[in-house]
Length: 94
Image 1 (cartoon, rainbow, N blue to C red):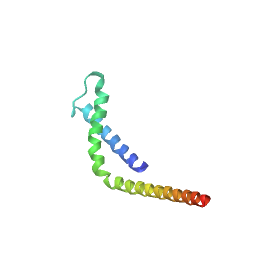
Image 2 (image 1 turned 90 degrees about the vertical axis):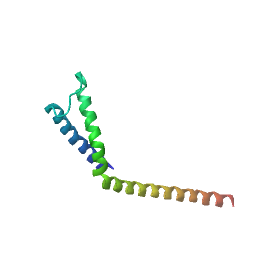
Image 3 (image 1 turned 60 degrees about the vertical axis):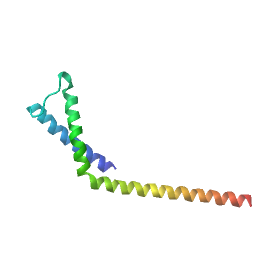
Image 4 (image 1 turned 30 degrees about the vertical axis):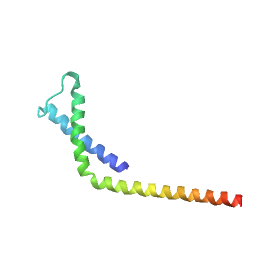
């Protein structure tokens, strides 16, 4: 998950640099007054979201498989602990 997050931040940083350059070169319009920085951030987020969605699909699927495996192992451990408690409780009552 850390790898996916770092890759996503990298794509956002790249988009931020491109948008910042485009705004200051006049390709994209500037924000009003002091809102220029927020305008650049908003444009970078809007551009990086679909790029990340498409470019990081395989990494997102890989992370999903790892997380699902961990959740399945935790569920199995919980079930094993429950059955151990039931066995101990039943033997103490008998």
